[in-house]
Length: 628
Image: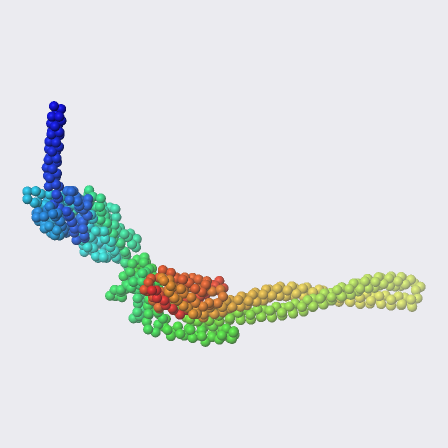
């Protein structure tokens, strides 16, 4: 019984398993049939290229977004069917518009699908096979926003619209432009529009603007102004940005002497500006330009100008004949070693001719340093002559001072002698006066005596007269000696004044002589410096060589002398556009980062500081090297 029950259990279990396997087969078969997808690939593109599909297309995913430019004019759709979908019918629908597509063929949808420009539209791709169909939905989102119209006007009307550079092209996103307006313009006006206006907004320099309406933008006193136009669409995180750089223009005119000279104007980047019909140039305010004027038989002139408004300049060229006349006048001067003060006027005349030249023409005078040497030589000669003259005057004053001192000593001795004489005379006079008093008393006494004999009285009278005469004589001598003394003292005073004056004059003259000698020494030093500088100017760097080593060039040269440094210049043109690339103390440099297949040209000049000034030799010959 148990065995029968076991067999029944086994039978039921086997039957149950069989049922399960059968059901699974049916389900597997159905699943296989229902999971077979008709589409294995979808491409959507426009004139600017493939449109991004998100997520990446997979036959098992039915819903996508597709990014398209907002101004697309035509879509191309390509559907690739799988083996399961072969023979099926493919349609693409957008709104009420429908297109029938061919398997694996890229087809333009034409104007029927222009409605996709309004983001949020759905493109439904359907594959129908028999009574079955499979669909894929692509919702459009904008990949970029673009303007259909963008105009700039100087008066707020289409009549005043000016051309943008480059020319604005409708429905191309994110472009940049420049425009030039007259210098007096203080306000410009911007007008924009889009292809489909629903949901769009625009800001001009951050201020909300109205489509199809001119909006004012102030320029004020600015020479340049950047205007930004930002386009956005409600509900989407994408913008279109346009920029307009507004530059103020001015008129620049050059009047030339001689008339008819060739004029060339270039901007800061070296681009040649084409003149207007009246010969003027349209230039930008605040920008710097270079202009050159040339004519046959004249020295060309090149200048720079920064435009501040309408400009008109007069350019008078110097004739080559005048330039040659200046150089010939300098060349005709004697060598510095042969110059005398007699040639001073010739040197001054040469300087006057040089100074009469415009500054740019002066730079063309090749022997101006010779003129400087001649002037320094004349200055030195004048200083030496003045020093000699001052020394001669000082020597003469010294001689006069010596004589005056000698005369003063003589006068002083005379005063001393007279003072001694007066002292003796004064003593003698006092003695004589005493004797006179005594003789007078004796005479008076004898005369009073009645019994005095006549002889004794006569003798007393004679003695009295002799004493009187002696006093008179001594008094006369004393008076004369005092007069002589006064004169002698006056002479001493006079000579002392003269000596003091001569001493002062001599000191001043010695100072002048010292200053003159210092000037002479200074001019001697300056002349030595100028001669040394002139010697450097006459030099050139010799034996310049260049050889390639990979993308490098090794440039070498011969020494220009002790204490020189060197500048190495490079160009890709053998005659112009050289730029300094190296400064060196040694006689060789390596120039790196050169381009293969190009030929480079090099030249070298030396320089040295003389008298506090960097002085340069002439340039060497140009050498070339090709980088292989």
